[in-house]
Length: 376
Image (tube, rainbow, N blue to C red; front, side, top):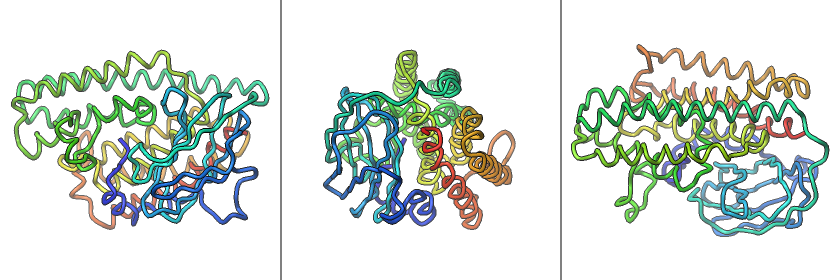
């Protein structure tokens, strides 16, 4: 789940600023035809509201004091595309594939999913008939998402069985594996905004009045590692499984776009690493952050592999840069392997955390250009 704690984001800034602002630049460096968007803590100003269908680049500049998030919402309120972690004083070029219709643009200071909006109208049709290879990549990615969610449900069922038995030792062993599939496909899962907070909300992200409704993995994580008991928590396990099954039931009707959902999703996965996993905020009690870290990277790499034939043809250097940077991140992760998993993240020293952050930042820069190439 996206980090929404302002304090947490401030702590992440020191290790991830180059990733968060990788697409930034002066006005002279704006992408050709980019639509300026100025976000503050309480405003969202869009320079143009009548748009043409197809590839659209928004240049989002955050002039506020909080980390911001820019979302393109469909008429039913669901997210078409989003760009998270736009730091104060930075700009990003955000490429979106817009179909015809009515959309709402949202700037969310503090990344709460709420904030000022601007309605836009998109008319016309995208140029050309599209690349058949991209259509196949999207279909293959959807199949991958379904398989990974099935794996999550199967492993979560084992985890929940241990919770119901109050078998703390076994539940601890099964906790991190149960989350791998989810973390691999997290940007797709987050499209269902009513489910994501139920299963993946972190205590630090909740307002005091929201804690009474807290549920999901991290509630059980806290019970296991801080309380040392999950007695009486069976209902939360059942609810977690039910919410994941609801998500599964919605996937067949989901259409995934190579630009918005794949290229954009890969960037979101790296942002998740930069703002939650590298900082150690995601798994505050279990310290199993490196398992999530690897899953996020694997999810982004899968997208790269599916899109690579097109990227290789259109920008061979970008394909090469991505290959090399994924390999570097994976090499660093191997240093921290232990048994079938990874060492507890609280045992990873400051220098090693910085190395991981630097590698993620280096990967994030070329990954931020993926959508632009795919949308050509």
